Length: 183
Image 1 (cartoon, rainbow, N blue to C red):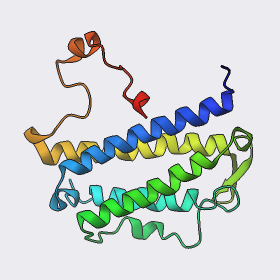
Image 2 (cartoon, rainbow, N blue to C red):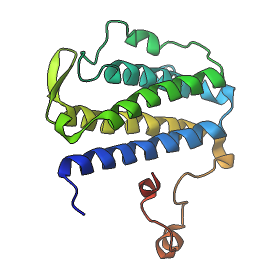
Image 3 (cartoon, one colour):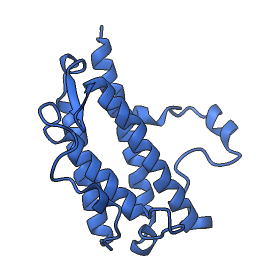
């Protein structure tokens, strides 16, 4: 079976992004509403605010992705960084809405789309570059979410990957070593 480079790129990008979403999901499961609003200091964002921003970005960038600028007029980016005191349910709904828009769009793309040009803030870039841009942007924010989650949970944090001192056991196990392969 032969697979084209374009199809492989789309499939692996989607698989990696689903893995990062899963890390975020598993972090959110561990946290209560108060912990979602914990702000490490005045210049840092809470998990709730990070999700507001990530969802706003996903909805703006990936709605009508091939036909409209990725920075929509209706997006209120500065408002994404304000505290809205959403409930945990509302935060998760926002998280899911953004991810659904993003992943639905990625799943609709074909390898022929990858070299097409799209715009973000009136700047042209290829579809492949736009995907790569988000492959770095969203995992960065998910890393922030995980780190804040670890801080607020402290000793009750349930590890999402290989625990400290457990590398040899993990490497010697018969399980799949690349967790993104389950997606």
